[in-house]
Amino acid sequence: MARGGGSQGVEVRPRAIRRQVPSLAKLRELTGLRWPTLDRAGQRLGRAKSILDLRAHARRRTPRAVFDYVDGGADGEISLVRSRRAFASVEFQPRVLRDVAKIDMSATVLGAPSSLPLVFAPTGFTRMMHHEGEVAVARAAGRLGVPYALSTMGTTSPERLAAEAPDTTRWFQLYVWRDRDAMHQLVERAGASGFSTLVLTVDSPVPGLRLRDVRNGLTLPPALTLRTLIDIARHPAWWANLLTTEPLEFAAFSSFKGTAAELSSTLFDPSVTFEDLAALRELWSGSLVVKGVQTTEDARAVVDHGADAVVLSNHGGRQLDQAPTPLEQLPEVVAAIGDRAEVYVDGGILNGADVVAAIALGADACLVGRAYLYGLMAGGEAGVERAGEILRADVARTLQLLGVNSVHDLEPEYVRFRR
Image: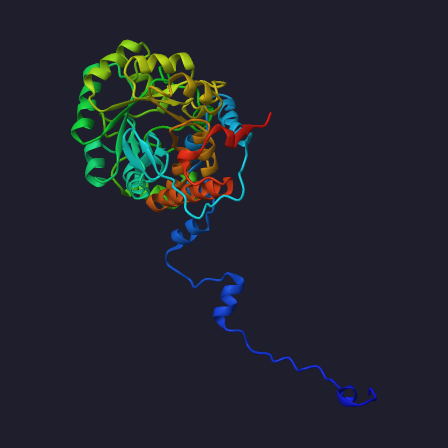
């Protein structure tokens, strides 16, 4: 014991630690445990924090042939890889000490408001990915507040989509058919159903060689072979939905059985020219977008023939392999036609930072396809909505970290390519 006067002579003993049994609520908070729920799909989607997380879920929940149809590209998939590498090579140039408490992500796309500079791109055979198909995508796009483009190769008719998603801004995607009369009737149906914009795809005079589909033996509708019977055991929910819902067939034309490439070769006209574009401009009174432009020269030409917007696109790397990379073309094309028409870009966009980079380089909007299809395969309509939520959050966070208040303030000075 210490000696001396006052407090120096008092022995100090450590205070006893008071212990208690932790509450269940505290354990749940610390461990992340959640009460069991019947909404397993909701839990699964809630755990997805990126589009690549949704891709992983989609891969587990769909047959290999279906997943590969969405995930793959043409030939050696060089264009597919280059598109992703282009976005990966972007280096942002952020500004600091900017007030980014409030941000504006809204855009005007062909004169109509959009919550993001984003369009849900047209995709074919969508009910093959999930039985809810195009209706699920359109409804989710409507809630997100962005346009959705229905494909000619879709499995839902223009009339039904209009009835099921009346508040969604609807575009209709078109290929030039050998049967021009039938094609014109389809265009008239889209107009009568309230579709505001026609998207003419011009990069598919013949189908690309998609080797994954060839090797998987993908047919439409899927054929029951020994391989698919084995796949049924691995993906029973997907097959149950396919077999117990309305038959998987095309809504814009009569039924077809065979591969996607065989269908394209049967329907599409490889002799299409700029004269066909001019004729379509005369037929269609709404906005006209030309998708699949891959050179500055062609961008000028399609605008000269009446296009209101062009989509720089190599079809997601699914047509001509080793085609130009859209993001890398963007600045030159914007400089050439940006004062005459809107310029969009697609291919390789898998997060909101990709969208911000493209807008900074001059794009008016971006089209995404695979991103929401991964969500559709992972969880139907809720999965598409989750993909939209992820992209929205990505865009917001990227703007704030860049020190930018609005997508309208994005300029090329905010990005550069690392070589």
